[in-house]
Image (tube, rainbow, N blue to C red; front, side):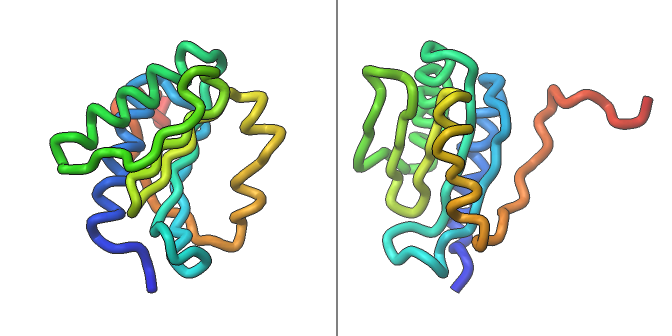
Length: 127
């Protein structure tokens, strides 16, 4: 069963918030067929701990008006890998080194990607 409409709304909003804070390598995966505890993962990277925390905070702020509060939050103090569990969606904001080392996208490679909006700050592809 594919991710619910609610999950897709949350993951795209979370991705937009992450991209607004200049997260890199932002991808979303539909893990609903593999896991029963959540529908989607959002993965995002940042080059330093301060930005990891800022991205996680922005995601929380963006999802709050949608009625979503994390039921679990881990890693904020260290700022190397912040996990935000919104039940339907789990957001992983990782320092670039952790992202490369743990390679969650390889671990979940059998899960279909969820199309995300292109950030408004993306350079124009027609030069």
